[in-house]
Image (cartoon, rainbow, N blue to C red; front, top):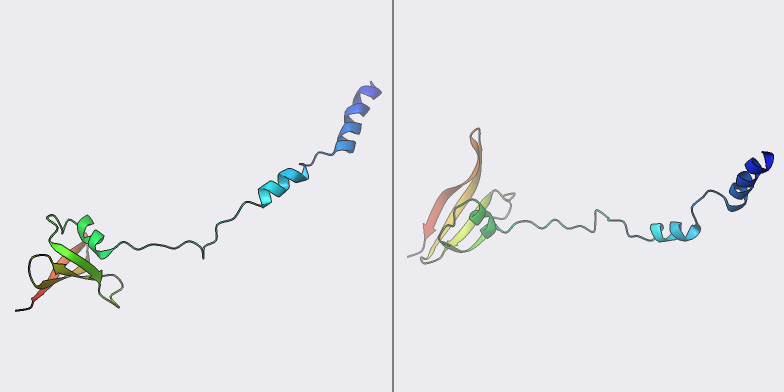
Length: 107
């Protein structure tokens, strides 16, 4: 009986119950994501207008956020006219939406 108990105890003492070093090394070498390495890509202004349903027939040839507007205003070039359209992001109790705000055309 004593021999049956001593044999497993001797095996545990000799071999140890820790994980082999090779397994630790392979786990430690995996790269960890770093917050500074991940870049958040902002949605283009043209895509924002498409997603909001304001570009059903591809009415605008290009669009950009107005500088210093915190991405709450967009200026878009009208495709078949020498005009520019300004959109403003509006927050209301009924929901948030992009509203056409102003249009300017050159003669």
